[in-house]
Image 1 (spheres, helix red, strand yellow):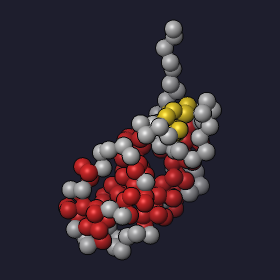
Image 2 (cartoon, one colour):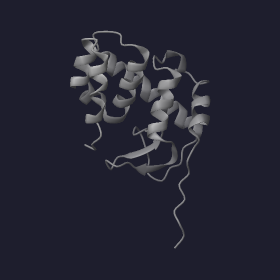
Image 3 (cartoon, rainbow, N blue to C red):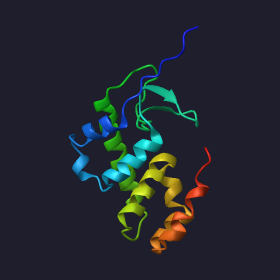
Length: 147
């Protein structure tokens, strides 16, 4: 039996490609925030099922994934931009204040991973809306469970 080969992509290459694509300049997430998302998510050009059983490709993309269909690094980059823009829009709708950039980046990263509905209803966002940054950060360990 031959070992399974997983086609991975380089996160740095995908981020460099993303910087050249439409939509990149509209992002509010910093380059450091994008790196945070990409490093946590990893990058795969072939679809796989994540720990929650959801078909995923690129950098944490779950939209329009076709099992067995390989994507390009450019498609992974565009997917990242589209998904981060959507995450930003949804999270900004539940924020009453503008947090510092590093807090914003962390919030977008976790919202990207666990979903914006859960984040917007969270104690973490209530602390952010009261500008209690440290208390909000102390909520991060609560987000380590699948489903």
